Length: 155
Image 1 (cartoon, rainbow, N blue to C red):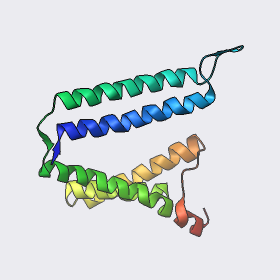
Image 2 (cartoon, helix red, strand yellow):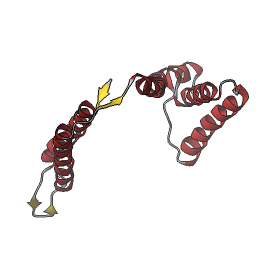
Image 3 (cartoon, one colour):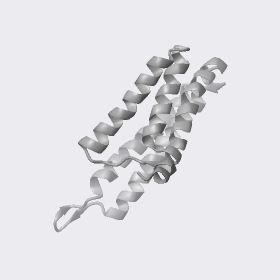
Image 4 (cartoon, rainbow, N blue to C red):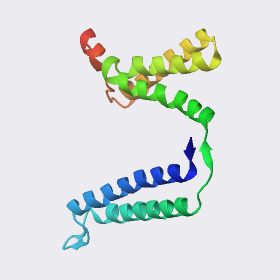
């Protein structure tokens, strides 16, 4: 079971780490004024400070106003049913490429949710992969990952 305090703390720490990374990386680019004007790291530095400040505020508020259990066993199971397939999808992209991976993900998600509407799921999966191909490869001429399978097939 997940309490509101631990969820707020985890979220604040993740966003705080992101804000700190932005602050540190913008220091490398330079902050302040130069003879040419504002240096390139000034705006990211300010944004990083805002993110970091918001994260500290959320951590403080989450700690002061502790909530009861937010995610029980059934909610965690539903969250896992959403999260695990997404992790598998991202994990198989280097192996089989973006287009087959997206088709399998859409097919699996729809077939599982609709419980047996396999034709609809297959059509949607093919449509999603085809739409990705047309948008990225044809329209924008951006090559998405083809994976090991694409390399074996000569793409």
